[in-house]
Image (cartoon, rainbow, N blue to C red; front, top):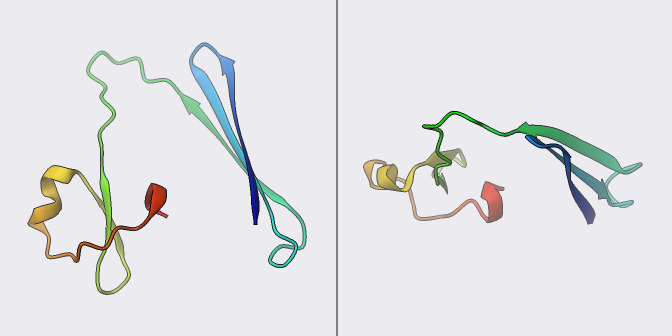
Length: 83
């Protein structure tokens, strides 16, 4: 699989993320995802860290690190970017 990612600043507070996936063995044609992200300007806004853990049923849970120990989940990480 080939993935091409593009990040484009389209304005002072807008970032466009685009990824195109190409794999002739899996897809009949390339496909693209595009997400527009807007900057948060609230003074109290904070980006928080989370951890992705997968339980015994294969369900993924995104938790802040401070709450990971509250759940009886195995220490199996979901992988890069929680995928």
